[in-house]
Length: 68
Image (cartoon, rainbow, N blue to C red):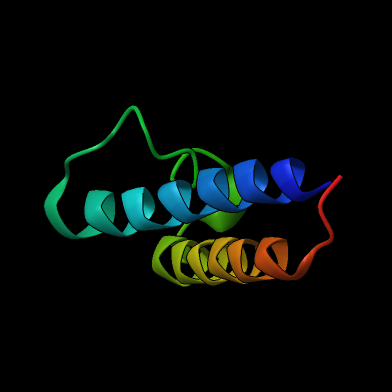
């Protein structure tokens, strides 16, 4: 379970940070998936922050999860 939380947290953190970088600079167009859904139009920065914080929370939770 610990490895699953670590991988999911890392992926979410990278997607959130990549989404923020894409919104601010235009880079990482292929890495970020948050700018693609139509229902997030206009809310990409907020969604990127939420995803990055969720990823960080999962990484913190993975440290507290018991070893398998």
